[in-house]
Image (cartoon, rainbow, N blue to C red):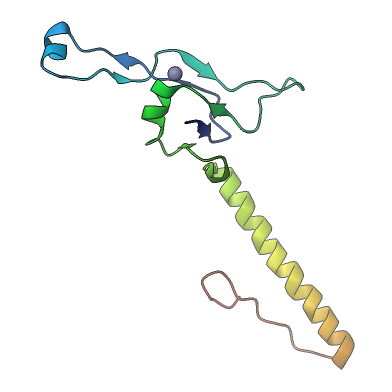
Length: 125
Ligand SMILES: [Zn+2]
């Protein structure tokens, strides 16, 4: 299974925990990652790739519970900046649609009151 990193993750290093021989005899498992530093690959343009798929079974076992990693390429977590940008674009888009509808309605009726914009939560802006 592959893990996909959030866009602001440039590298990861998960140390391996190897229990002492006594602990191993007691059943304490080997945990952690592989201990190698994995870095976001660089594309042909010399820039880090936008989607980083890490293929390391030992590290993936740990990264599955990390909130900046995803086991699915279509569910890669967004950075706080990406979340803010998406919200701003969505809000701007709603405003542009309302303006366009208002202009169309004004054209048909002469004068038409501005339309209310209903948000995600059902609030009227
Ligand atoms: Zn690894």
